[in-house]
Length: 344
Image 1 (tube, rainbow, N blue to C red):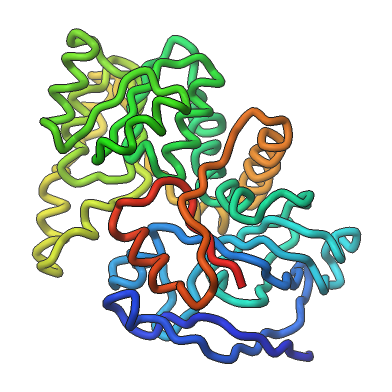
Image 2: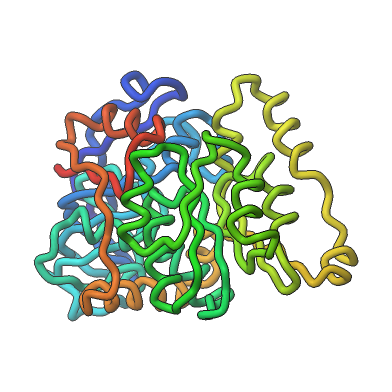
């Protein structure tokens, strides 16, 4: 079986962004079975990449490795069992790591053909929009009578969740950490905005709703926010956990992890039943591994919504490949809004 010579940014060690990456040659085997080879035009950044760089993401491969979950590019080779009509098509695609490279191998079902839309907008449809769509339309659909709380509302997933919830007619409470992000989430349709750095967000939400309860919380933070959200949920409410960014702020290794778990406490199933509350966990890597058709369905759905003008991707920054450390540092700082993309 032949190989393709390429290049990639390898994550070589944990630490600061300007020290952790190294541009190295990469050899990729030609696609087999239902695989396709994509010549990469641009790749997207996700907070999981920051977690991997800090040594906090257990799903990441051992160092040195190539991280990255999504690319835009052109399919230049196809495996014998893949959809042959995709050869030569420009696509947006998921990959199981390997995205920070000039070429990547992925399964044909993880690709959707696109037009000439900007790569940075398309990249926000992948991990961010698919995660949002999976939670808001597939896992537990939003209804127009729902009130939803969206954490990190100015980020890639958050901005998509606002738009998807408003398409359904729901009431949206957007939680942000900086005042300059408030106008963005309002422009996307948020009905209320809370800044968690002004005062305790739980108290702000209770005051906004006159002590009424929320129906859904989309929470990528976990830790200390978990108990607050659980208290805010009404009967039939759904707390959807899809990340643990509070853990990434810990500076004490194992002690930080233990404290993170302690803050979340224990959950007894009978307690959920008696209160009629629901806790759902989302890890899109597991969905990709074990439910690939679900991933394909969600990706095609968000590409369709984008093509129909019903959702607008939010782009936080576009970087040239030699500025990858800057892109990572900006994402980690929490000051960016929307999708960050790196172009070769």
